[in-house]
Image (tube, rainbow, N blue to C red; front, top):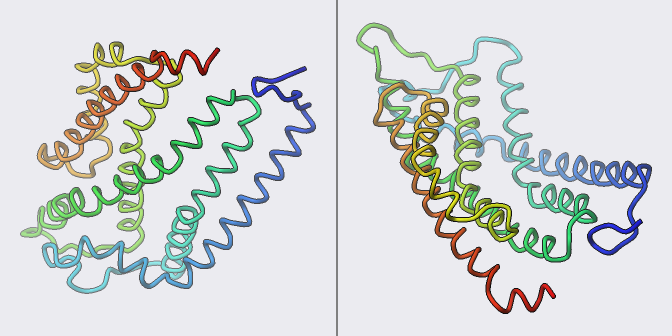
Length: 255
């Protein structure tokens, strides 16, 4: 039996052995990267605390922890997440290599070509969240109600909030890359995406309301508007992908 790639299809046992080998490599690399990140834990924690320093006086001093194991737990969590991010290129490569027998040569070429762009888009989302979204959002959260109560920020909930928002913003910035890749593979096209533009605007504001920790429309708009812009960019990239797919050169190569 022959797969899409032209190679002999693997049996179930071969797939399981391949999966085990790939998972073993991923676990080892993530463990090494986590240990490396733990060595620089103070810098990583300072980096995550920096957007909130001085807002409303809430973090003019160090945040607090109220449980004996809270600090070591949050430090290990941050080290693991940082290690996973450092190991992300290897993780994605192992995933692609595992699914590659089920892909055609053209599909494998597209996936490998878009791997650097995927990582770059994720980093751009993290940068946007860190420098654009966090300052006004945290300023609102830390200053709201301070005339009634004094904010004492716990390290655990704060780090959980920051890391969650960074992850979602990085994921959102993958949208144009994913749209281009799907259009290049012929799964979607720019006309269909354009027809759902109005629906996506509503979805963008709903997603912003879920992702953003504040309830004010200004901070929610800071998230929703970039999502809409990314969708529009994805439509233009999908249009380019459709033209490339229908070009005479592409037809010759596919013959």
